[in-house]
Length: 100
Image 1 (tube, rainbow, N blue to C red):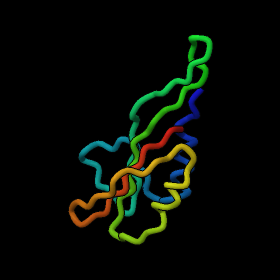
Image 2 (cartoon, rainbow, N blue to C red):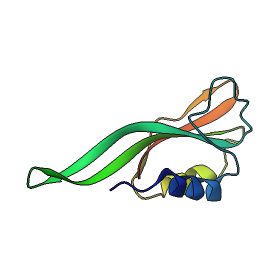
Image 3 (cartoon, rainbow, N blue to C red):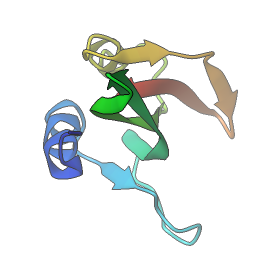
Image 4 (tube, rainbow, N blue to C red):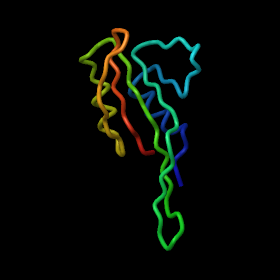
């Protein structure tokens, strides 16, 4: 089965102090931060039955510093893939997909 989200939160807090799970739109974010949310569930099947379940999360590291090392720490997580980087409101956004 999928691992608990609390375990993922603990890992992310080890990379960045400010971590937000599906924050409401009125939440004031403190940068640098990691914002993540549920995306989908993938199942590995064996004998026509789900053998293992993995939750996929959309994760974005947001910072004012374009040379921050935390983005590399996130990219090294097992099951994590980086997506296209972008800037918005003078903030650097590093999106990832993470299977956990």
